[in-house]
Image (cartoon, rainbow, N blue to C red; front, side, top):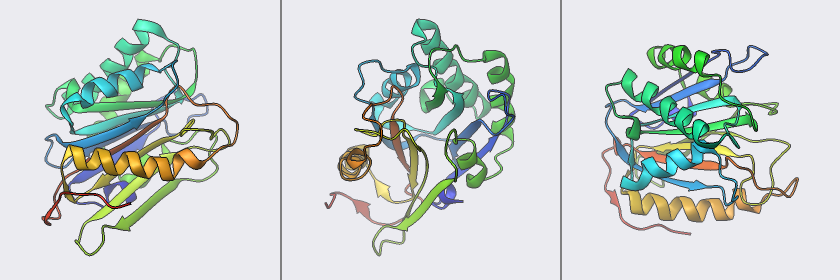
Length: 241
């Protein structure tokens, strides 16, 4: 339940047919209020940026998001304009399931590079996952590719009463600057987009960017955080290293 440990978030994951193995391959995180909240992101520095990264960057320009739709098994990278349209469509499908705009959702994908997304299963699968939010653990399982274990964590935010929860994907291919890393964090702390962005950028520099396994940055590296403020604590106005 790590990604849903913070108040104000729901999540789920399932197999919809992207992976030939039949293992879980789509996850959705959404605010319980079904409304956008402050959000921030750190993305790949690879010049060959994947379509989901382009779309998420665009949707984060207003500093808010209501959710994230994630897929594993296909990276939707090196797929050109059609790939960007597919990533946008994934946001449209997730958003429409909750009466939200496509721009309210962020999108992440991981897996094979250079293959078009199997939109026939995406079109039917995302609405099914959205209608059955079966928990944070199911969402975390849907991120895995070469990982041998699920990655989840929860931590208290000092003595504020708020928590940060997270799920991540990444194994064997970790490299400089987050390579092949997807991570989504949630918090019920009361924080603005600017505070979240400063804190996330600093945290990524001190953690993911210190790892090196294969010396290649990925096309899809993404770390996101959404803050519901549902713990009803005092506003966080500054970050600490």
